[in-house]
Image 1 (spheres, rainbow, N blue to C red):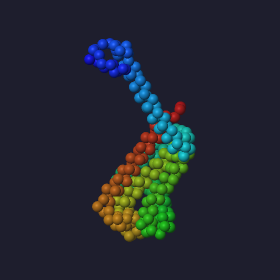
Image 2: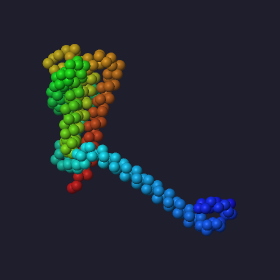
Image 3: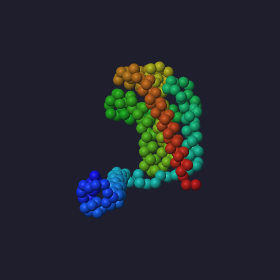
Image 4: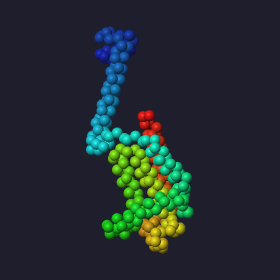
Length: 241
């Protein structure tokens, strides 16, 4: 027995309905097409709604609609050189050792912003915030530079700022790890009481995880530098020649 999909008349097996005359195979094909068309319409509706949602978000940030400036070959060569200088000369461990000239030069630049961070965050009158403010500020300054280049849709500048930003992760991680060993020379020849991360780990009782935390920051820095260069390379390769 078979039930007609159109009029629901029950009848013996046949190629068409004895009551309404519909041909079962053709009617089933029609139902299949109708179901497929409905699914496509629903899918298109979802896509349209998502597009409207995205446009609504972008409407609050009109600069995100602006096209990125292409990475010129000279800029890419410079940034690649900077990447390989980090790769060759930057520390490969969180333990402090004598730094290369390149690492020391970058560290001294970051040190200026580090010390300025103590003064800046010290304004709030909180000793803990002032202590951590040095490391925060040496991350904050390159992040502000990154935000500026990103706002102006400058890929090369954004890449430079990100390399600088993630390089500071490495610098901070070494300072963190040194809180236990106290081998890093402090500015002005100050003693261990002036060591930011020794004081922070003491304050928050984090000596059980101090080396783990420093290694996490250290590897985040290296991963960030590497992914930044990959992003620069892909965008440089996609430039119209």
